[in-house]
Image (cartoon, rainbow, N blue to C red):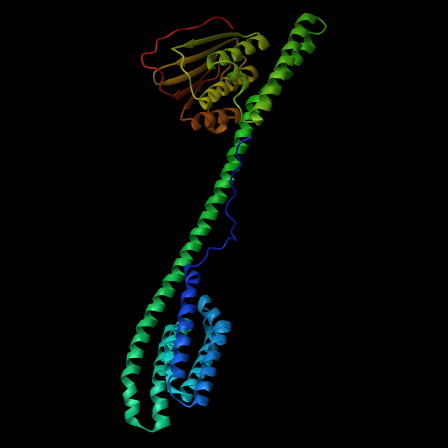
Length: 415
């Protein structure tokens, strides 16, 4: 059988966000900031009890971030949970700097946390207040305006850095979300394209099977039924002729059984496997003459050259379809089958002197529609010429390039 049609990607398959893949760098940055701040606190020379409590306050920020804040930052949740996280973060920070102002170095970690969890406007406002808190605490605890003003330049520098950092983080987060959205849209588009391709493959396979069944099983059964009916009518008066027709019916049944097995396996049809294309077409003409008693002439012109298997199959099926239509509908007496090899391609012509019909592509049966589809698939064209009372000509042209300077040889005679 043919290779299975690939299944589309599962729509539930997740596409990892680049921001999540790299968020571990932020975790490392926060951890380093915590360790440095704790180290500076220990070396600050403050009262050991106050330093210890300040370290405890900073340490509580770690589970507050890991258990609550990190999820907000990676999911861009915002809303009330982000406000709760920011309030808890500021409260622990205020407690730490109230115990020892050296804890203000934690701002290098706290500012990015605020900027990544809150909306840009509120985040910048809270970052501004957070950077002014150390100056305010020093002023309130020491009562020295000079000491507080001495910290102001560092606070302003921190504010400027925090604003720049906030704008950078906001831009990167927006780009990351946009990139994630585009990746998700691309994934959905690929899934849709794969699904459409899968459905188109199914439709094409059904069309192939329908054509093969029509060109083999249906035509073979029609031929067998006709031969059996002829044998029934001749059984009493012409038993020899009846036996001949039954023999032809048995042969047709065997050939069609083998043909059916072959097309199920998607292999080259038996007539083409055992014979070149001209001989395979001749056999079809011979079979029509033997089964119906019509006068069938066959001719092959031009220097024969190998054609691709797909082309040979289509031309053979075209001959079978045209001859089957003559057998069923034409009421003809004489039939002509001609296969022409030329420099530009191969031409198959099947003509009869039957009743003819009015050509209307919109009212064609499945056989002719299938024939046109087959020929179009290999880049060829089908022309049907007919009128009531003047017979029918079916011409199939497949453009190919034969050997340069090919001669012409004709094989003819009654089939």
